[in-house]
Amino acid sequence: MSDEQQYDVIVVGSGGGALTGAALAARAGLSVAVVERTPLLGGTSAYSGGACWLPGSQVQQRAGLPDSTDGARTYLEAILPDVDAPSTRARVEAFLAHAPELVAELETDPDLDFEWLPFPEYYDAPGRVPSGRSIQPTKVRRDALLPLVAELVRPPVELDRVGSPGRRTLTGGQALVARLATIVVREGGTVLTGHTVVGLLTDGEDDGRVVGVRTADGLELTATRGVLVAAGGFEGNAAQRAERGVPGDVAWSMAPRETNRGEAIDAAVALGAAADYSALGWFCPGLAQPDGGGSFTLGFRSGVMVDANGHRYANESLPYDRFGREMAKAPERVPSWFVFDSAEGGRLPGIAMPEGDPAAHLEAGTWVTADTVEELAALAGVPADALTATVERYNGFCTAGVDDDFGRGNDEYDTFFTAGTGPNRALSPVAQAPFYAARFVLSDLGTKGGLLTDPAGRVLHTDGTPFRGLYAAGNSAASLFGGVYPGPGAPLGSAMVFASLAVRDMVAGPGQPHQD
Image (tube, rainbow, N blue to C red):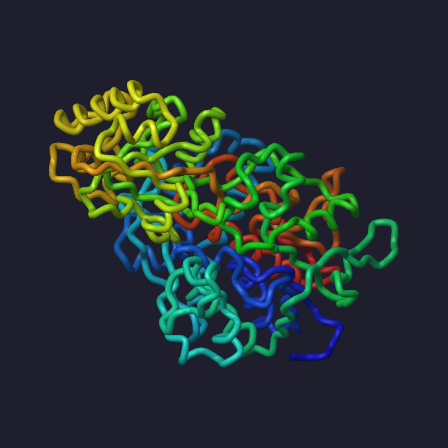
């Protein structure tokens, strides 16, 4: 690593958006420093499945999908509530125009390519692509990486949380982080780990051009072209979550522990940057863990989710963010209990990352088990008559093949993970003793409120004018999608696009036309 303190571009953070910006800046011949607070690269991106919602690209074309920029526009217009607000429309159009350009540019690099990932989008709306339009990086072997990159990529969540090293083959989010980091290092970029950015340096002029960063350990780095803040949100900051009304808990977030406390966002706000926290977060039901944490969970194959009163309150097969938002609507829903039977041998009939050991759950009380639903209710602390009636009603829906209460099984997404054999694949009965109940909390993949930016990724002052030299992307910026989660990879896709647009603006250089 270089001892140089001045660079053309400084990137704060090391997730998918941050490393996209760093890789493109380095490929453009600019000197780049990636500043990461932890000893490892990747943040929450490394925990993710690596899906990237980047519509209209050559990857979807290669796969023969009925995807296009116009189709994605139609889809977003149908699901975003404020799409016609001028600032939103401008950013949506910038995202749609640049997404295929970005994929094409990245795929010119010998160390990065993508493939289509079948995974349904999250809303039944015009413009939706059957089986989804998301793409992902191809897998890569650790021994094929540069040694520094192989050493620094964060392991998957189920290994990282217990201190185990990563696997020999990197897939999903780890593959994305590894491939982008490879480009950064290969092109001479500097990677600085273990440094938390707590301040931004300015040139001292009235309009305050941002010219660098200051870290908690006193390091000052200067940037001649700009600083890109892409360091995640504030999901790890309990005080800020409470102040900004973000439901859930620090312990339940899926971000790497002891990270994402919002310091870089705060540093920009201290300079007069505008921020919007109203979109709250990217939510999901979280399987409660014995250590007090939560695990990202999706793809329930059977079972019912009930509140403290023993009642269902939503379609359990909803996309995870939509179900999480249903959880957040009433206090009796957090925690919830997911009730299932022994059809899968006592394992959770769903995908939890990590799931944990059922025996450890039972010992800790995060799961309970009993031979009857009535006994199960007593152990879970919910009314026995209500839970019994809920399970009986649900089992009747399984026999009929129709969920009269919440329509489970009516949508493409509902049946994507299921393998039921009844008239409705998403409805499998809770009938085989012993029965189980697993405690669920409201988890998140990160907050999605942050700095307001323009279509070039430039951070805006409170008066709406753009900063010189300061950019933001990913969860450090207010989300393009507001309170909506369009489909798999929307967080990564939008982060990557606006990081790329920020770098394009930086490459133009001082005094050059901006990419408005």
